[in-house]
Length: 108
Image (cartoon, rainbow, N blue to C red; front, side, top):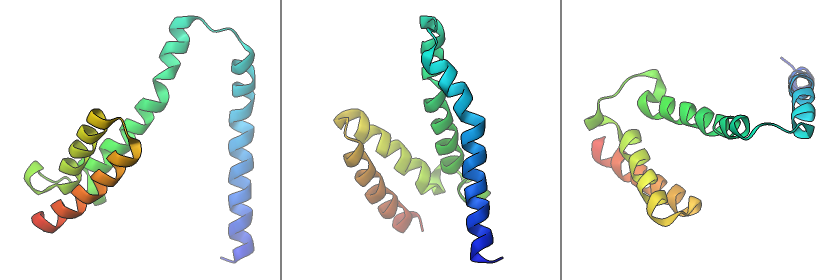
């Protein structure tokens, strides 16, 4: 596949994504939504991110690992603990990377 074809596919996906998402965002941004609905909608990004993270942690490379042999699991738990204690996204990210590298070296 040529480079031009790849860029054409990327541009097509970007345009399609915009066309699909923009109308609903434009309408909802101007509408007055009930508080319960706004609160409910606020949980969607967190839920989507949790789904992606849990899938990557529980099944790295598409295979289930037991808790004793899964450095992803322990590094994720440690990252969550660091964030909970410090409320620092950068600190939690750096701590998680260091924990993961150390655990991967230990667990092999």
